[in-house]
Length: 213
Image: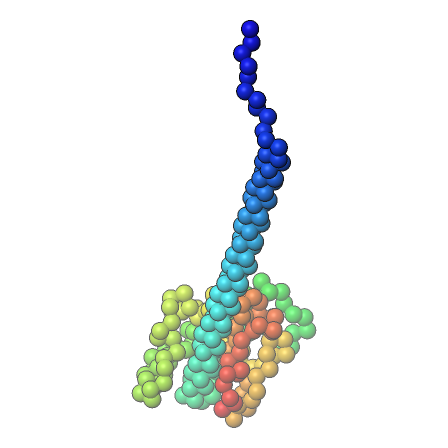
């Protein structure tokens, strides 16, 4: 004899309520996922903006430091010329004045390093005396506070690690410095953030911040 079993049928409408609840739970989970994806996307955008801002601030700081160094070098070279009968130190030109073809950047980089070492070597005997004169006048030091990465006693580099170049005279491929009172057009310049000497768009020049003497 079979025992009676309990009627497992749900009351009218209960099954529909359960199905609607399950659908609602799935919708709730889907909405939470969308919220999470939106939050992640917003965080990525904010992070990208912060990185871009930090890069911009760092680049502006590097430009400011390099411009200041170039300006000081321009003043220092003018003082050097004053005490040496307006004679400028002989340096290897990175481009010959009568050149018809532009050299390649790798060749320019090698010549820039040699040029840099030569003008640093030429200035070194005079540097201490000229720096002392500047100290007496209360003028800031040119290289006294520079880190070793910028000045190691042999090479003087800009904020991006490229050797600074001394140009005894202007050149149409490099820069066109205004004449000073002595009719000279010497200047210093940096290759800038891209570290390419022939790309004048981002090059930095001592004559951009120093009025003609």
